[in-house]
Length: 514
Ligand code: ATP
Image 1 (tube, helix red, strand yellow):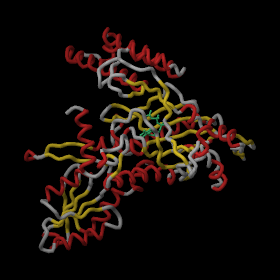
Image 2 (cartoon, helix red, strand yellow):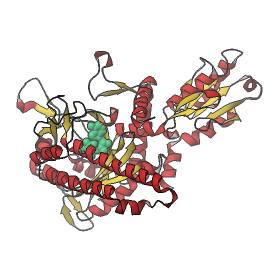
Image 3 (cartoon, helix red, strand yellow):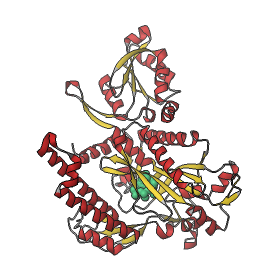
Image 4 (cartoon, helix red, strand yellow):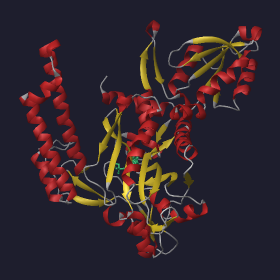
């Protein structure tokens, strides 16, 4: 199966089992907006809790906040979003499709990387055992030619982006002979800047004075509350403020399912530090965040760091944690050293001091900030796509299974009476009652037991508990584990403790810190 087909299956599975629906579907949908169904909302809530618990509960110097989405419009002038939150866009005149100029070039560079991989594959086939990959990469003329092209194009792109040279970006697209994937032509318009913020009116008077924006990031709500939180919580630097909330961006290219949405959710943490200490904390948070991702158990090969070529107007260092999505390595989380830019700007625009008095140095200063910013929806997609598997079973059957981290699974245990009679449903209800205070459960008595197992596999339920005639005799049940499909007989009295430890956040968090 190609990665493209796999991705299509993942999207279809997400809909079929109540994880993600296109928004306003009965009206033919709304582009790049999605709704989370009964299973989706559970998984999403679990992701948010796991982040919150590990960020706020596990760090004594990090506290939470829930700022409003609507904020004073001056905030977005101060932050630079009104002037500079732009993407370079380009249209194809034939297909009328719109693209981000930098994304077209990045896709082109990714294709060149793929060409190198193909050359390596060819070499490996030709030379067999004797094949030496590093030597091949360093000497093969085709590889060297492609590498040279990647370097030149990458360098020109970086320079054009840094200088905001829109004509230079267009020329590079033409020089690389990039065609529109839809029309197949190189009939491109000029490159223009496009502001990504949504705006709306507040109050009843429809004039510019009342124009406000839907926040494009949650971070600014944290900055403008910096002193409120610091003073009321008697926080000492270094300390962090964490927030989970919706953000809105009028993305030019909205594709790849919930990877790039116009309404999405972020989990952000701003860490306030002494000026001059920001690089220490930047490196600290890089390592911490990778550790958090690793604790999900999806495997280290799925993550990599990518340093930013073009630093945003506020940053002195920035990187992404990229994840191997079915469509390639893409950004999952950003870690940014934002300097004192935001607080200084708010000091200037509001006329209110945004300073901290440091009792250790007896100095007042505007703190520096290191930010970790991760999308809930992208984390959802990362987990969902890595967990999805189609497996052949004995007897020619197959199953689609979501091997989600147990602690994040929407339903932890399914309670299944073998048949709908002989007192088994009543006994099963008793077991359900026993577990339902501690975990999310499902009771299911419809269809054959095999079909019910398949349904639970498809939503990622780690444990299925089957109640049969023997249960009535000796009070034992069959406990089936999702990934191995192994079954064992255990007493009802042992069930709760057995499952509770595996699904508990404290268990997962202690592993994170252990
Ligand atoms: P990209 O380069 O992919 O547009 P970005 O660098 O603009 O992302 P940030 O501003 O650093 O993203 O936002 C932090 C995080 O918020 C991202 O790592 C991502 O997980 C999430 N995010 C940003 N834009 C979107 C979006 N349109 N849809 C879903 N998640 C998003």
